[in-house]
Length: 66
Image (cartoon, rainbow, N blue to C red; front, top):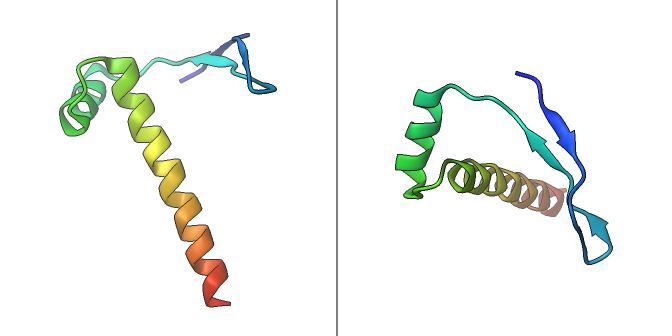
């Protein structure tokens, strides 16, 4: 699975570069159903953003335990 970079707009001082990837259609449909989102792009983006946020919360939690 290889991506293709394309420059995107600048927002708030950071560049929003886009990456195009190919995914198995069944995987994307499953993500759309689980996320409750009708757009494949929006569904996959929502799941990725949620996983990143979860990772950040875990890092903060782990730092609090030290």
